[in-house]
Image (cartoon, rainbow, N blue to C red; front, side, top):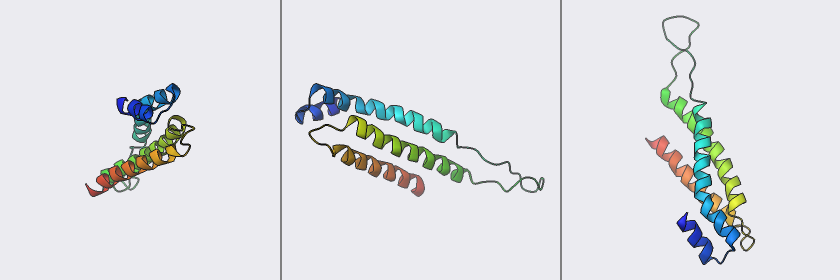
Amino acid sequence: MILGATLAHEAGFSHQYKVTFMLFPLVVHCLDIISSTIGMLFVRTTPGLPGYDSVYRALEDPIAIMKRAYKIAMLVGLIGFFFICHQLLNPPKYPDAWIMFGLCGIVGMLVAYLFIEVT
Protein backbone atom coordinates (compact mmCIF):
# COMPACT_ATOMS: atom_id res chain seq x y z
CA MET A 1 0.00 0.00 0.00
CA ILE A 2 2.86 2.34 0.78
CA LEU A 3 4.51 1.48 -2.52
CA GLY A 4 1.30 2.23 -4.42
CA ALA A 5 0.88 5.58 -2.66
CA THR A 6 4.50 6.48 -3.35
CA LEU A 7 4.13 5.50 -7.00
CA ALA A 8 1.00 7.64 -7.38
CA HIS A 9 2.64 10.55 -5.55
CA GLU A 10 5.77 10.44 -7.73
CA ALA A 11 3.61 10.34 -10.87
CA GLY A 12 1.84 13.52 -9.70
CA PHE A 13 -1.64 11.99 -9.44
CA SER A 14 -4.49 13.65 -7.58
CA HIS A 15 -5.53 12.52 -4.11
CA GLN A 16 -8.34 10.38 -5.59
CA TYR A 17 -5.92 8.27 -7.63
CA LYS A 18 -3.45 8.01 -4.77
CA VAL A 19 -6.18 6.31 -2.76
CA THR A 20 -6.99 3.84 -5.56
CA PHE A 21 -3.32 2.92 -5.90
CA MET A 22 -3.15 2.41 -2.13
CA LEU A 23 -6.26 0.21 -2.07
CA PHE A 24 -5.19 -1.90 -5.04
CA PRO A 25 -3.24 -4.54 -3.02
CA LEU A 26 -6.10 -4.92 -0.56
CA VAL A 27 -8.66 -5.43 -3.32
CA VAL A 28 -6.38 -7.94 -5.08
CA HIS A 29 -6.09 -9.99 -1.90
CA CYS A 30 -9.89 -9.96 -1.56
CA LEU A 31 -9.99 -11.31 -5.11
CA ASP A 32 -7.53 -14.03 -4.04
CA ILE A 33 -9.94 -15.19 -1.36
CA ILE A 34 -12.90 -15.19 -3.74
CA SER A 35 -11.13 -16.98 -6.61
CA SER A 36 -9.58 -19.62 -4.34
CA THR A 37 -12.99 -20.27 -2.76
CA ILE A 38 -14.53 -20.74 -6.21
CA GLY A 39 -11.66 -23.04 -7.14
CA MET A 40 -12.20 -25.13 -4.01
CA LEU A 41 -15.77 -25.78 -5.08
CA PHE A 42 -14.42 -27.66 -8.10
CA VAL A 43 -12.23 -30.05 -6.09
CA ARG A 44 -14.34 -33.19 -6.32
CA THR A 45 -14.00 -36.60 -7.78
CA THR A 46 -16.29 -39.23 -9.18
CA PRO A 47 -16.83 -42.33 -7.07
CA GLY A 48 -14.34 -44.97 -7.98
CA LEU A 49 -13.23 -48.24 -6.56
CA PRO A 50 -11.75 -50.59 -9.15
CA GLY A 51 -12.69 -54.21 -8.82
CA TYR A 52 -15.49 -53.55 -6.34
CA ASP A 53 -18.50 -52.91 -8.55
CA SER A 54 -19.12 -52.22 -12.24
CA VAL A 55 -21.00 -49.03 -11.38
CA TYR A 56 -17.80 -47.38 -10.15
CA ARG A 57 -15.21 -45.94 -12.52
CA ALA A 58 -11.44 -46.02 -12.26
CA LEU A 59 -9.88 -43.78 -9.65
CA GLU A 60 -8.97 -40.29 -10.79
CA ASP A 61 -5.52 -38.83 -10.33
CA PRO A 62 -5.67 -36.46 -7.32
CA ILE A 63 -3.21 -34.04 -8.93
CA ALA A 64 -5.42 -33.82 -12.04
CA ILE A 65 -8.38 -32.88 -9.84
CA MET A 66 -6.38 -30.19 -8.09
CA LYS A 67 -5.00 -28.85 -11.38
CA ARG A 68 -8.54 -28.59 -12.76
CA ALA A 69 -9.63 -26.55 -9.75
CA TYR A 70 -6.46 -24.43 -9.95
CA LYS A 71 -7.15 -23.62 -13.61
CA ILE A 72 -10.66 -22.48 -12.76
CA ALA A 73 -9.41 -20.35 -9.86
CA MET A 74 -6.70 -18.90 -12.10
CA LEU A 75 -9.24 -18.01 -14.80
CA VAL A 76 -11.49 -16.28 -12.27
CA GLY A 77 -8.46 -14.49 -10.83
CA LEU A 78 -7.28 -13.40 -14.27
CA ILE A 79 -10.64 -11.93 -15.24
CA GLY A 80 -11.02 -10.28 -11.83
CA PHE A 81 -7.47 -8.92 -11.92
CA PHE A 82 -8.05 -7.20 -15.25
CA PHE A 83 -11.32 -5.74 -13.95
CA ILE A 84 -9.61 -4.46 -10.80
CA CYS A 85 -6.75 -2.98 -12.82
CA HIS A 86 -9.24 -1.22 -15.08
CA GLN A 87 -11.21 0.17 -12.16
CA LEU A 88 -8.38 1.19 -9.84
CA LEU A 89 -5.30 1.78 -11.99
CA ASN A 90 -6.78 3.91 -14.74
CA PRO A 91 -5.73 7.52 -14.21
CA PRO A 92 -6.65 10.03 -16.94
CA LYS A 93 -3.03 11.07 -17.31
CA TYR A 94 -2.06 7.53 -18.44
CA PRO A 95 -5.20 5.88 -19.85
CA ASP A 96 -3.52 2.63 -20.93
CA ALA A 97 -1.53 2.04 -17.73
CA TRP A 98 -4.03 -0.53 -16.46
CA ILE A 99 -3.23 -2.78 -19.43
CA MET A 100 0.46 -2.82 -18.49
CA PHE A 101 -0.38 -3.64 -14.87
CA GLY A 102 -2.71 -6.39 -16.10
CA LEU A 103 0.03 -7.86 -18.28
CA CYS A 104 2.33 -7.95 -15.26
CA GLY A 105 -0.36 -9.92 -13.46
CA ILE A 106 -0.61 -12.36 -16.37
CA VAL A 107 3.13 -13.00 -16.19
CA GLY A 108 2.88 -13.69 -12.46
CA MET A 109 -0.07 -16.06 -12.90
CA LEU A 110 1.63 -17.93 -15.74
CA VAL A 111 4.80 -18.37 -13.69
CA ALA A 112 2.72 -19.69 -10.78
CA TYR A 113 0.99 -22.13 -13.14
CA LEU A 114 4.34 -23.27 -14.50
CA PHE A 115 5.52 -23.94 -10.94
CA ILE A 116 2.47 -26.17 -10.47
CA GLU A 117 3.14 -28.02 -13.72
CA VAL A 118 6.84 -28.50 -13.02
CA THR A 119 6.39 -29.76 -9.47
